[in-house]
Length: 337
Image 1: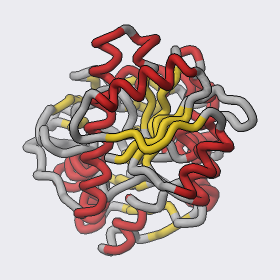
Image 2: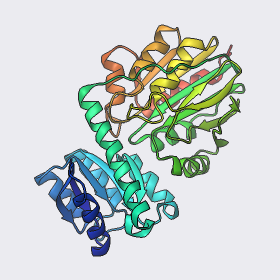
Image 3: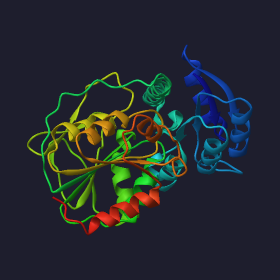
Image 4: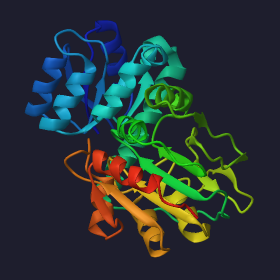
């Protein structure tokens, strides 16, 4: 892949350049020292991927990401020192269109930091390729079963954290509602995402541990890079298969569980994201008689996953974030059975 680097710290930028130079499949095509330079260079020579720092002069990484996604969209990985200490900025960047986050190698620690970065780049490369080739995952062999009166299943990727927060902060779930969120995010950031989401919505949020029971009246977040499944005993588990699928955890896998085995009332919502993950699963949910919604283009950070759902008729409704929240509010007074 052709890679651009946006980092104003010379030592950090050089560390990133050396990591990329040490591979045969990637090359650095430019290095920007400010956010403004990154926006301009991306417009002049668009890379396949940008390694974007958060803290830069003139224009920070969050706003640079936002402007790039509006003007010259491409894959963006936030690479910054101590991301766990900048949770608010990280999620603002993810909301603006960045795909994922990892620590700067020079600060993460030699070989371990290099390996983590290259693993992220490899995953994003698969994601970009998969979105171009419109691949579909093999179905995971999972069990499924009813757990509570209503299940709200939400799938999201690029821009997802802010979209999920917007929906949940504008809707009070009725009693007996279980909410499960499958968000493409690094497993090391799952706990931070749950904490951040809880602070921004006022709704109880917890990460899912393997074997947890599906719970009503709270939001449960997938926290690993393995796929989330639901078994017949109403317990949530993680499955490594399909291993070669770039979307991890896959929205398709969880939505497929709901479609194949969930006997009660359910709603599937597919939000902003790059690629096609979730589209086939949402279609399966619709064919199983569940309510299905996809986010519209205007309110999406990246109109990939929702577009894929719309293209195959998976969504009964295509709505803005505000309209999704309004639709859920209208359901609040309805009997969920």
